[in-house]
Amino acid sequence: MIRFSNVSKSYDKEPILKNLTMSVERGELAFITGPSGAGKSTLLKLIYCSERPDEGQITVADQVASKMKQRLIPRYRRQIGVVFQDFKLLNNKTVYDNIALALRIHQMNSKAIRSQVINVLKEVNMTHKAKEYPPCLSGGEQQRVVVARAMVTKPMILLADEPTGNLDPENEKSIMHLFRQINTMGTTVLIATHNESLYSGSGRRVLIIKDKYIDKEIMG
Amino acid sequence: MKSIPYYLQTALKNLWIEKWINLLTVLSISIGMLILCTFSVITLNLDSVLKQWSKGFGMVVYINEQASKEDEENLKALFMADKDFLEIKYISKEEALTGVRKALGDDAIIIDEIKENPLPSSFELKLQSKLLVPEYVKSKAAKMKQMAGVAEVQYGEQWLSSLNKISETMQKGAIVLGLAIFIAVTFITYSTIKIFFHRRKEEVETLKLLGATKMFIKFPYLLEGLFIGTLGGIISAATIYSAYSFVTLRIGEFLPSLNFSIAVLPVQAYIIIPFAGAFMSLIGSYIAIGRIKY
Ligand SMILES: Nc1ncnc2c1ncn2[C@@H]1O[C@H](COP(=O)(O)OP(=O)(O)OP(=O)(O)O)[C@@H](O)[C@H]1O
Ligand SMILES: [Mg+2]
Image (cartoon, rainbow over all chains, first blue to last red; front, side, top):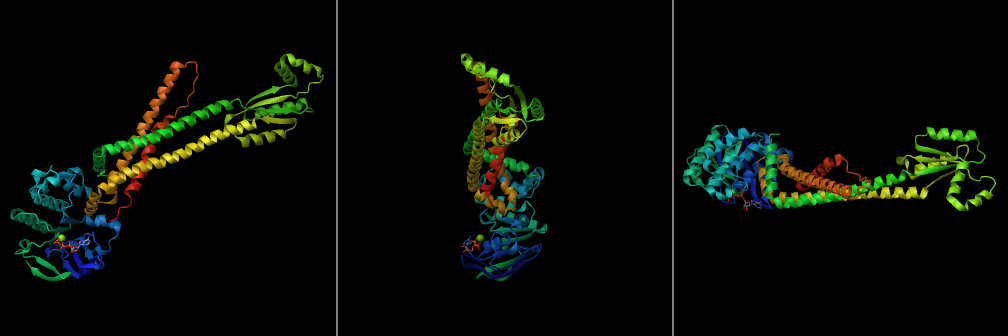
């Protein structure tokens, strides 16, 4: 589903990823880990075309992401749900509207939007905050809204960048449960984290970035 | 299509959030268009005044001494058949002399000394006012001079060309002013939308990451520009209409004897003005948004 072959990426001549090769299969749920600054977020950005590789090829669902044409990017991105590390919630929109926005971008009609948003809010335990604005929410609450926005469109691929960074163990568990649930529905899930408790004992593949490439792979 | 309510809602919300800047922009646009409208009304009125004057414009065709009665009849028939002329008046030698006598009054004795009437007979022709273009009148006069029995053709050459120059200058002025206003209105909307778009840069980046198309991102801003321009146009159209009603009312009240004929902006203008405002602002906002790159 996601395939990197010999991908290199540097920022201002500072190499971050070098000759990285890896793959995530269709329907898989996998983790990427590594120390802070290892390039986990960069790797995810390469997948959703927010960054372009200097070398190598990236294919996602039979589409060559590394050479994606400008005009094809919007449609391509709509197949991918992203939980951004820095949230990227719109502060001038309510929780409800932030989540609804993702569906509006998918050209869904208002009625369908309403029921979907209400459902997903329930799933992330945020129904009571639907009318609040992001700045009035705690870090963990914002994070749950971002997760809701990423999954509400039922994407083919879900990328989660440190999705539990601000969560207590209780919420962490429920979010992980959600990811597994989405995964069983057929969505390929890739989670970047340095939180060991997320993947240990999960029985899933964990790709470890070290020295700018995937150094090794373990079973969580 | 499904997104239209969302676009509208977003645009209206943005308009409301930035209501003061928007109000200022709308007023600037309406002032700009008001200047143009005022100038147009003045041009229109001057034009109608000029037309009024030129109704009196005529050509005089003097008949040759040697011309026969038949030649005169022929000429008359020719002039009658010519659709360029509104009015044709024949003045015989005797009538011409009577005219001169009248003009001279007591001094008419001088003429009585002359035994033979030296005045030629003539035709006074009134041209249709739409044909009062110097070149046309000139060539018409030249052609008539070639006709059998015609001695001389006279017309107010100087007067005609200055009349035309005024008219032309006004028209050129209207075009230049129109262009200037067009640029100004476009630019006003451009800068307003540019500011808004810039302020929401982060939001735009997020929309892009969520897979929004260029159109999805642009549409609310285009609508916003469209709204601002239309409103500016409506305000200026309303202002010019009330100003016009006021002026005509007052003239009718205080100077009823003055058979005024102020040329009105045609009814279509009140529809065209808001549309023009919308069009200009749409261009302005389109340029302001610029190219969206992923
Ligand atoms: N836009 C950028 N310009 C320049 N350097 C960047 C840019 N983005 C990231 N970097 C650098 O690239 C390196 C990898 O960043 P990245 O965000 O991918 O790390 P990460 O593994 O996600 O770290 P963390 O666990 O802290 O989120 C960092 O050293 C960072 O400073
Ligand atoms: Mg990161």
